[in-house]
Length: 488
Image 1 (cartoon, helix red, strand yellow):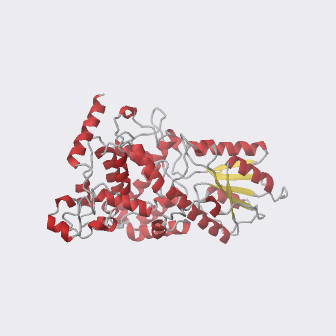
Image 2 (cartoon, helix red, strand yellow):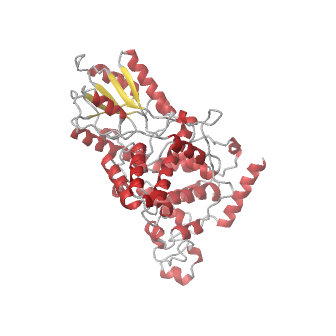
Image 3 (spheres, helix red, strand yellow):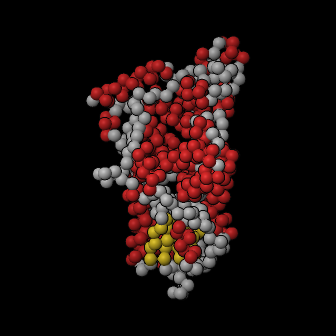
């Protein structure tokens, strides 16, 4: 048991798996007291269950395992260690505080209802044993309560939200990582492998390992490289799935390996040094703003993943079609750009943003399948599955969300492919059975001449499926369904 004068601090890591710009860790380090770093894998606390919370999807669980390993290594270099425990956060943290003689437990806030509820439980359990709970700044650029409309509600249209955020935002400089942490006595913890976060039989994570390097060091390297070499042309290049035109930061942000504040400041410095890139950097920052917008929506609507933001959609006549849903999930719709995106998702745990919109539109409008079905699939397969962005983006596409796409916008998957993957490189990468088709027909293989198909080794209906629905038929059916909703 530690003495009163040497009472350690506990830092409870949550969705902030980094050392730099970590307010709770910074505050604990500044005390000079021994620091116990703790991560609790909590899938048992009632607030983290439905309706407002849910377990991590399979791809996100894989990422979490890698991120925790990287955090362990970073803490060891700073002289500390990471204690892993599984179970109820309130019980585990109070028990660890009691056993270690800790005087204070610090953590960064998460502006989501289930996480706030768990934090309240932790604070109450600590109060009961006389241990101080210290809540620090969270992982948003602005507190959701600071940006409200005249009626005191959260804003539902992005452009005015973004203007308000930019006008009011003056985030302090990111905090440095502690150079040295005062270690506490060794404490028993779980072995990460005992949590079974990574797939084994079968091991489907090979594509994730090929694609990603989770962790804080990788996150900062990605940001630096993007601002140095990748941001030029971002305004238009971000829509090209056949090119590397995006930052790749979304999963790192999702797990807090880098903070929005770090991204904001680094981008600001880059814009000041290279004024010619200001338009591209502004567009990049607006994407960070969209993430913030979605998180603010989630703050006001904790059940965003199941509830239509526009109640009129509660009566929408979605179709139940398991075969069509399965074809979409497997990348076998017969529309190459959609299929390429769905296969990229399964292999890499991510899908290019432009293709996400096209694939999502195809599910909810061409197939009239409930957006919640797509949202659940993305939740399980995306490494960057975010509790705010994932449902908010699906609702945007379906037309039932905030600042939603107009109901008459039905993406034409052929034209989208031809416009944003004009040479077919993206399709050739992810739909290799079409790789030998000429670019002019690769996005609509059914239009190729029989000799072209034969030369490319394509047999429609056998080596690659016919379209599961004609675009014109799907579009007209969708418009009729939306028109009935508007009429009602």
